[in-house]
Length: 88
Image (tube, rainbow, N blue to C red; front, side, top):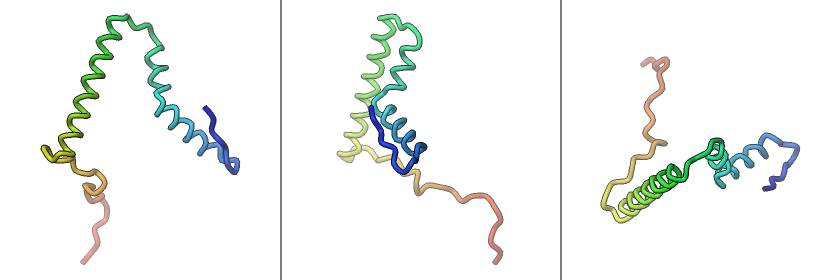
């Protein structure tokens, strides 16, 4: 994997590299390979992941079809920050 460094901005290049590695699943693979996993445990884990994926896809499909409501966006659901109140 290759990332170009522009204008000697190594920090930005590192962020890009980490994001790419995360997307490829390298960190997850490293975590799984840290210890030996028995074949039976691996099979159970993969089946659980498949169930989780299928439920997530079914939920997304139901939202698209309008069968269930979409979750509220967290971007606009922020509460007011505590601090000094404006005097009126």
